[in-house]
Image 1 (cartoon, rainbow, N blue to C red):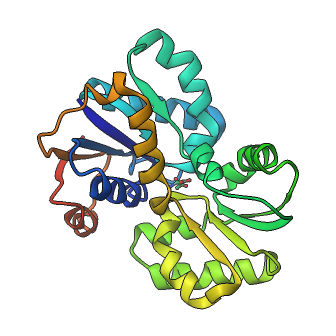
Image 2: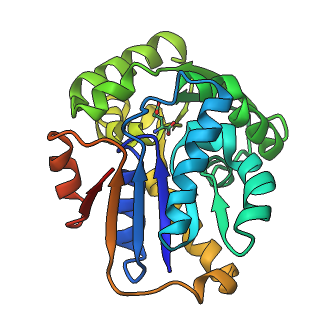
Amino acid sequence: MKIGFFDSGLGGLTILKAVAKELSQYDYAFYGDTKNLPYGDKTESEIYELTKKGVKHLFDEGSALVIIACNTASAETARRLQQEFLLTEYPDRKILGIIVPTVEMMSFDKKTNVALLATKRTVESKKYDLELQLKSNGNVVLHSIPAPELVPLIELGEIEAATEAAISRIEKEASESTVIVLGCTHYSQLKQGLRLHFGDTKSILSQDEIIPNKLSEYLTNHPEITSRLTNTGERSIHLTEHRPDYDLVMGQFLGGVYVGE
Ligand code: DGL
């Protein structure tokens, strides 16, 4: 069986790419809901139904475990999918979100100013606020910056323009922050430009550098899942809508096979 990755578009591929590099022995499948991107402005129930459809597709295609590699969908659906869908329909499989593991990687020994760059929906869900307060014992001041305008730019490969826009929002709205959480999988592609610009003054947390270790830990602790994973080298990509300019991004992903709907 495979490890499945779900995202609203291609952003989650950055996470899958990092995981497949670190844990190259496993088989992987990716589902990108490019037809319905962006999720960041949708309602909670729309996001729930769309995510459920994608996760179901990944399970039916043979994933033992699905990572919701999208903060917006993780914030709005992970817990509910685990409680209402998984238990009744796929009790022998697992669904993991990416917000809790991201917060678990952070340490707070002193009061810290954190800026969260995320979609409007992720910010409004307050999921990061909740998890950060729990983890830091109130030692965090969080400035949330809803920046949905960056997602379409990144999907188009306009990384420089998206980086400039992100810098300008951070400088205007959270200049005093010392930690920046890139709380949207698309934004991992901005990490280099942001690090170059902010240098040592802000540390940039990018989920492609967090999830591989956390998943590795999870697999070590869950032999009932790990023992079912196969090692044939398969990498498949399923997009709900294909555009010719996506080929370049997919081509960069380990020779993944495109299967359109
Ligand atoms: N990649 C998604 C996330 O991590 C957001 C993109 C969208 O708005 O669909 O939140």
